[in-house]
Image 1 (cartoon, rainbow, N blue to C red):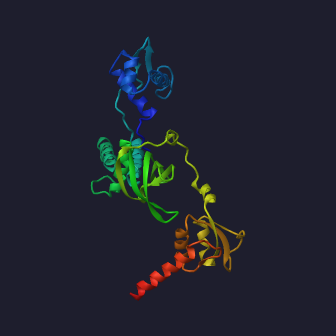
Image 2 (image 1 turned 30 degrees about the horizontal axis):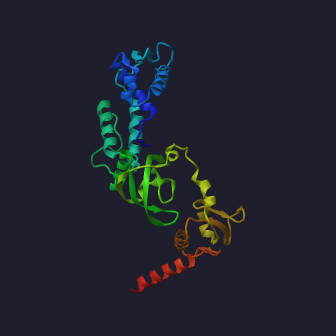
Amino acid sequence: MTSAAPSRLSRLLAMVPYFEARPGIKLAEAAKDLGVNEKTLTADLNQLIVCGLPGYGPEHLIDIQFWDGYVSVQYAAGTDRPLRLTGSEAGILLMALNMVLQTRGSADAGAVRSTIAKIEEAMGATYRAVTTGADADDRTSPADRLIREAVESRRALRMKYYTASRDEVTDRVVDPIRIKAVDGHTYLEAWCRSSEGTRLFRFDRVEAAAVLDEPSVPPADATVPVEAVDFGVLTGELPAAHIEIDPDSIWLLEYYAAEPDEELTDEPTGPITATLRYGSPQWLARFLLGFGGRVRLLSTVDGVGELIAHSARSARDRYSA
């Protein structure tokens, strides 16, 4: 996940070396340098003094003295020494970085490769990532780079986006909020001006993007991180169609938002009926055409018959030509 503001963790990690380099600095001056107010900085310092090395006794914890408006580090608990990875730690980290490299849009590919190379150089030839060379597959598209640029510069973004549930490409202007990874895919979380709501946009469904010369201004309540939701529960909000399925296509019940009208206890010998949730008439028409007559529409859905007939005529005309 990428966010414009540093997390508290990254701020805390930077504080100890900062204060070590500035013994006796004024609290007010440090707060200004670190971009926080004095109340927040005091809370961070109170958090730091209960952090430290395993064992977590008084001699293991970070010791920072702050009184009368001045701050000094008495004991850094190892944060004053470069990190040394064990072999197993390096292997796990390289594996994780390689997974990040293979997930489109999740991070800057050049930065990830540079990090992998530095770890490998430090650990020696024994530890190598699966994909590290300059000839490795670079899955960063121009659209991916523009999305990341919009997030980092806090500017609005115009994009052409393919919506799979409606089988259509739309032009949208969005106010980027952050980038997040969900189930192996990278998403842009943004305020969509046309939908007037926060939406997730999958990187691999953005066909084109352009960073606008205007600030990203999502509503304040839209920028608050929310817990991931089970998108499966949203299918109940979609329209439903009644369909008939031939026995050799019953497997579709496991892959689509479809429920049989009756519980299946044995292998069916004839067609069964089911209720199918769909995103748009265009998607439903493509779904039915894809099964070549093995799935049939029983209910009336406006526009679907015309779409199927149009596709059939177009296919016949191409054969005639």
